[in-house]
Length: 331
Image 1 (spheres, helix red, strand yellow):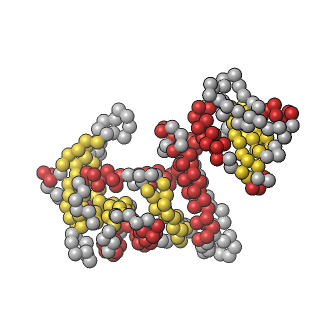
Image 2 (cartoon, one colour; image 1 turned 90 degrees about the vertical axis):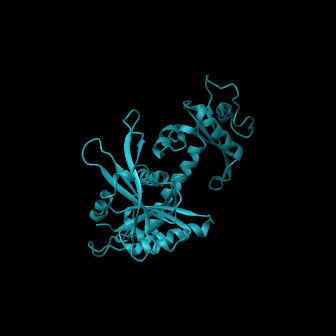
Image 3 (cartoon, helix red, strand yellow; image 1 turned 30 degrees about the vertical axis):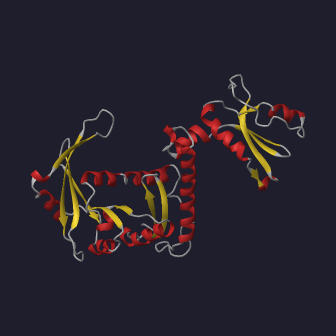
């Protein structure tokens, strides 16, 4: 029983979520497209919005008629694989198809052969026939796979380029998987009232939106952290960043003016030094800890780098034992 749904608007180029809509479990994608477009245009002024939608948005012709009214928005919509549609695609002349070879699913795999062509589909209520891109994927064994895209308000972009653009939607699907497995996006506490009739649970949009958006904001912060690291970490998953960067043993030393974070491990020190120096240069203070500043560094070791420098070179107000430890904090 689907009690609630989370709809995220995603930006494939940056692999980030932009907008969240929380609905009851019986809501459909086509009902929310208009509000998502308005939400984007209310915050930015793009020359053109290009929206990639799954087949759930094209189940009804009425939804396509609604999309057609947004003339400044280009829609790339997965066409529902209905028997009548598939039969019409198979009747298209073979000479109209253009063959392409694409890389296989993994390194060293055989190239994947596809054939692509263009046609039009008549939709009730839309004056012009809708541009339709039909793709036939040759199977290694078994039947070939047919699928198509409805294209609204773009008559010039080549068909193959539109197909590759739509495939970037895979980052959105991957985003949901990461949200569930890395950030527990589907485990929202107190999402609905527990009292009353169990077979008719209530609906509380506020707690659901808050918990889901906090998870999305945490992921956004982790993405910023990944961009500050070497290139191989730019699109790293949250669990990868936790394993390589965040989960590290440290000693906390509280003085009258500072909170010192002394990292005990020297593994991947070159990876973290630029971030630590940036943190120390910002001179962040903690209002809930008496305004003490945060300083971070590595414990002294025989592997000190040539350009290493002490985090706090002079602190006369702290005790002698603490001073000895602080002199061994380097970055």
